Image (cartoon, rainbow, N blue to C red; front, side, top):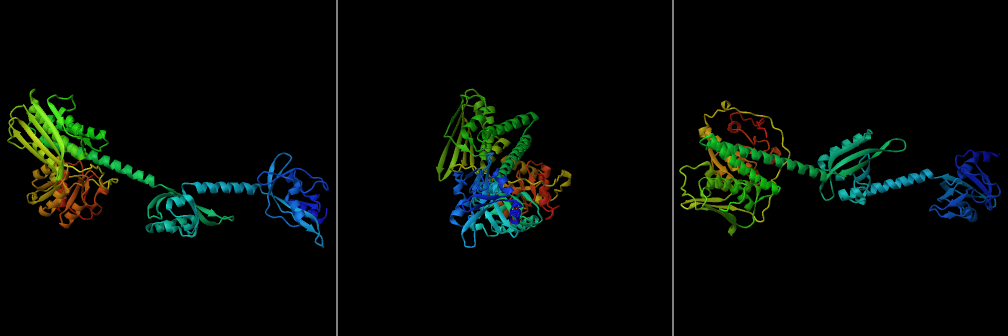
Length: 600
């Protein structure tokens, strides 16, 4: 074997030679192994493969193979590919490198061909193409960048999420989509990547081309070169904005539920206090208290049927007058279909309960021949009004009561707190009541601003002996509360302690007027009046230098932004807690840095 043949035999790739007519004159062991056979020297031509195919799978004649072309044209062939088939049926893709051999005069005397198995490269190419397709079709943003934060690749998912095309972002710094306040975050990410760390499911915010803030979950991995050096990073960003919005909505719903439960408990507490205060015996207290609680429950049942979007007036009247029983032929109803908002529905339910209870005990429904007519309509005489006329007849003679009882006060204050008017006439033929309530058209039920998660405040309890009321007679306390029963209960507790009560104010306008004209020493403010925030009232109290506390079922995040550190009295509360807050507001134990808080 010549030195040249020894050299070719030792090569790990297939090599063979031919004469000028393409007859094989030599092949090494690697070639025989690749072909799966040993061709006949001097007889087999062009290539030792059993069969040949074009890259697309079409059969290729041996005389069309790259080496044959090289011999015919007298030039090397580069960049070609083909597929050989072995006798065992296995097909192998390969890259041929045929080169003509020439004598001193330049005449072609043969050729040498080197065959490289590209199976691994082809598989790698297929895998790369598959991965590229996955990256390009992914809904997630998949981006690669250098360790200096310069973007190298930008897929269609990134374009969809952030609004920038690949042409706009490749070569640009990743800081282009990072909010200014989070720039240090990217510095820390790059620092961790340079140490070889992988960052998984890191939730943060990025800025789209439109300026919209996008919540994303990031997974960032270091990229290595062939020597294992970290040369960059790949980043997968999943848009979790919808999830974040859903989480926020869930928090809002839980906070709203929490608020409604606490408001209901506070209302029940106030009903109990006021019923007991005006009852002449325990038996009468139980009767009146239970009746009012049942009225509240019936109103809540109606609201629950409409997912707390409102209550239809006819159903509300029927429930409160008949107490859920079958229709009473003595009672007639008439009026158009009309939806009351939840807050008005609850208040009107208590009003109707008081009127219905009075009719059954002392009025038209206390005798078989008595009659009750409840009619309503919508009027637009300058202002939109819902008007209800309650007319009793055929019952015992009625006279105006000598004392202003709780029921009468409840009827009057409930209507007034809704911005309405009530007129009661004790006629000889029966009681007549006209109620006028303002309404908006179309009726819109909106959730008040800021129902975010509650904070956990430190506990602060007061006992009556700890609260000094020696100067209470000189102090005027403004009460801003739209829940009538609760405002009445607050008023009673304050008056029993010797304070002068200003209000209560149940609307924004009424409260604004009393803040300026009431000459108040302190104020108790509901965080939401009729579905409206109280930011303006809080600012007005601050301007007038009137110390105030929030009385609410909401958490601190629902309070006006500038006043979230103010004293907070959570519903429901005890009289001692109420007086303790007033005591603190008046400066006995006040501290600007460590304002005590009542648990919410």
